Image 1 (cartoon, rainbow, N blue to C red):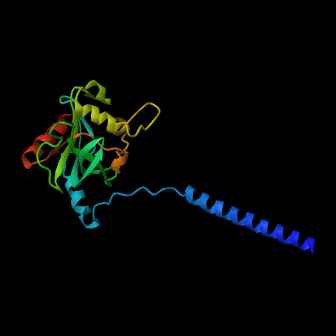
Image 2 (cartoon, one colour):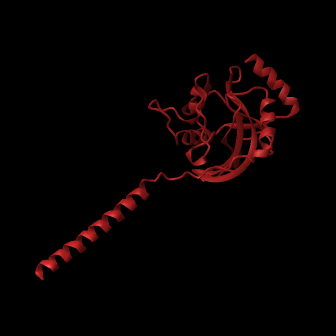
Image 3 (cartoon, rainbow, N blue to C red):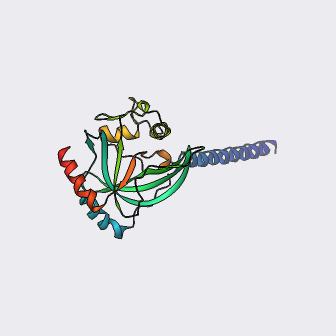
Length: 219
């Protein structure tokens, strides 16, 4: 009889141990499942040919350096806008651009920033309309053939741009978003929490387009 109780107790303990082990493995697997990053909705498929046509008609495709203006510039099509509160309240514009093999990519570009104790500072030269061709550029004395040196610029804008740029450090050399894009062609983030471009935006008009095409040929 005593032996039977011992066997029964051992069996119960064994079942409890197995149950605990199963429970731990199940929860460990749940923790190991990669967290899904929320995806930004892509442009509706039916509008893709229109965007592609606009991008192919831009003054040029890809990112170029304009020596005389100390400017890095590419062309894109303006998409939706959104508001985020990252460091300061910022308005972002989704910009579609053309990749090396005519594939359409996108990133986010700051169009306005609400600095403390200041009016909203606009990074867009003129009003932007969704579906419009825009120039996306970074210009100034702190811009050169090798990229952008935000620390050479003492302004609220440059300090913010450096903070945003360094959300992602892309290699052991300290290369961040803007310079990774300029030097190596690494695509800027598609999810704003990982960073975005604090560059300037300029809508293209029919009059400015021909001038910019000539600029591109001379650069």
